Length: 260
Image (cartoon, rainbow, N blue to C red; front, side, top):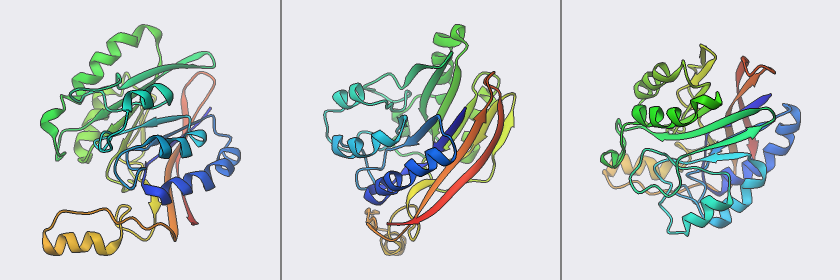
């Protein structure tokens, strides 16, 4: 079984990159399961019904992060309609933050958590470590293959979380920073990477135009999204391969540049 983990999809250019790239990539890599974090698909911040409807046919499962509720939509209907979850360990969550699906003969448990270190509104998030414990207790008797999107700023928090759950989870992949990391590792049949990266403009600073980000640093004014709508793009992802016994036997970064 071949699983592709995709980083944060940013704006229209990110959505168009998914639409353009995924069909050929799915065939080339014989992908069985494609997962992406989509919290930035609506002009870099949040989700809408229209943006989800564009890219959901190309993805098997979607996760979110701190921007999950930035757009004022009927989110309850969205969560009921799509294979999507938001972080479990937030206040006033709309859906449960996890979902279990049976794929073939195995149960797959998808979990979405958000970190607390250096994160805005972190007082509204409860401990992701204990949150994992809560969910694991519900499903451990099913012996599921557990995949966690840990949406967080600090690599130290992500790494610590991996070591905390590596005897119970099978894949822990970090999102949020939009910067792909090189710390791929496997321990106790648990794969880890601090951050998968992003899908969006290659000629940008984490998806936004150079000028908008540099101006924010120079003036100390609030950052405003200014997302390029065309040009060179990057799709950051990680391929994880598992055998018929659900043992991880290979993994590699898959980073693809294209032009929109």
